[in-house]
Length: 136
Image 1 (cartoon, rainbow, N blue to C red):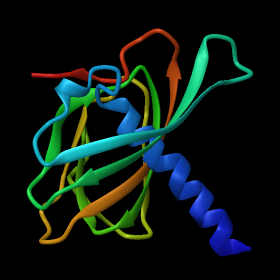
Image 2 (cartoon, one colour):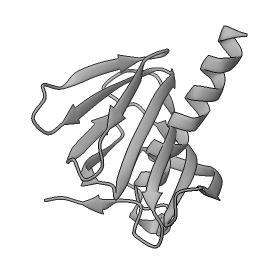
Image 3 (cartoon, rainbow, N blue to C red):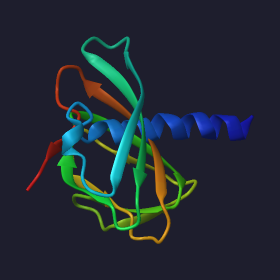
Image 4 (cartoon, rainbow, N blue to C red):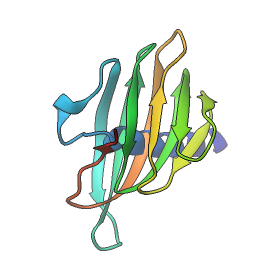
């Protein structure tokens, strides 16, 4: 039962991560990064939606600094990912690790490993806003 709960949490998290980076404009995806939206649903909180995404990072692939109009909940399914969140030192997240990014906080992620990384992300977002906004 615990494994199933972890799998569900992972799926929710990966969807959030992937959805957050320009899902509504597929051409905006960086090189070496692919995201597939798994589901999108309105929440019981007015004006909010949850988006579940599977994000894949090729070795060397990543997403630059960006923000989301809501929270990102992520779970690394396989591989490893270097995550940088403003105000914190970079951390390496490996398969089985989860991470959280608060709404509006600048962050980035990249695969510095030698194998593909898969992340399950769930975003809890304000409806009608872009999933991600790049930051220079």
